[in-house]
Picture (cartoon, rainbow, N blue to C red):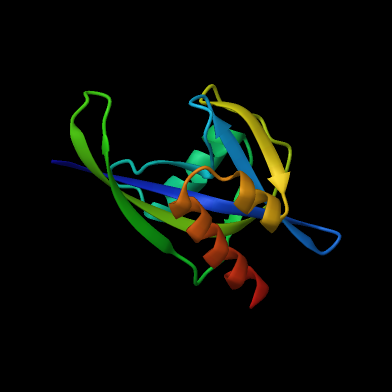
Length: 138
């Protein structure tokens, strides 16, 4: 079975002391965070920041001390089973003017409760919950 590795970032901004999270709606219609494959000779953190720039046209500063990892099995483009490990970091947006890539059809800056509600996958909800706790306890 093929093993794939991805990295992403749970991006947030502060608006009047409220934390808002950036969610992207993919062409397949699901809502998730920015993430993508780790390229050869690239760190997980560098991959997460590159993917954010490519997918949303923004940058962020990764907060040290947070990394959430999960794995799952899925059918790849060739309809073969593949195992994927995803690493998520947390980072505050250093720019907030989103410019979506061709992979996405929409985006939203949302409060924790709204973001949790709109996320499609349980593993993303779990990562958001952990990230929100981390941000609130710094």
